[in-house]
Image (cartoon, rainbow, N blue to C red; front, side, top):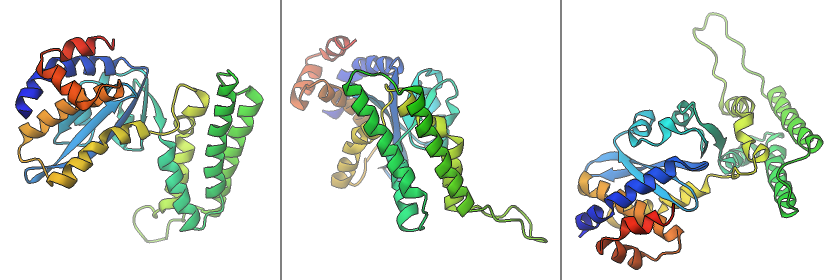
Length: 275
């Protein structure tokens, strides 16, 4: 039955992959899956209307390249700080600020960093102000207001660097001294400022990558029940089926109706309506 449904959705999922590759904004994420006795990776590229899943042996750039969407993608990618995403050089990148805010909470509560909570709050303040202005029909911050936000961001990072000077090299000891988690976090905020604040400079960009995280959640429920996939072919069939069903759900089509449509041979016709 699984194989039959996978075959019935093959053309439809290829059309979904084609649609996803042309989206103006995409969300990207990946998660590990147990398949037989080894670890595989499920890669997700999606938005609020479409989902595309792919299974691969690797987590990084090789898998992204073979998936056939990201290497040629020229628009906006939303993701976390997984380094392989930054190898997609033609794309414009946006960072999930929810991930960063969790790290700032840790820096504040566990590492007692005085700059971390104000920076956490600043990100939330910018988002809140954006929503207020959007409700009024605005499409961007006034130059003076944005300059104020940007300057506060820089000042908080400067405060952080002052509190956490990089250790000096110890004479006679080989190699560079370790920076530690806090300095590395500060450097990420500094070096990737444009990507982190993409949601503020381009209001088409969401604040978080929650869309991708919600889209892959089903896989964790599956593993919680089943423990693993018994075969790689079965796992790949499941990824294809869920690409179709997840996209159907995002268009308000229930699971049963989506499956019934596919087995009736009308999956491609249904997906074509979304173009």
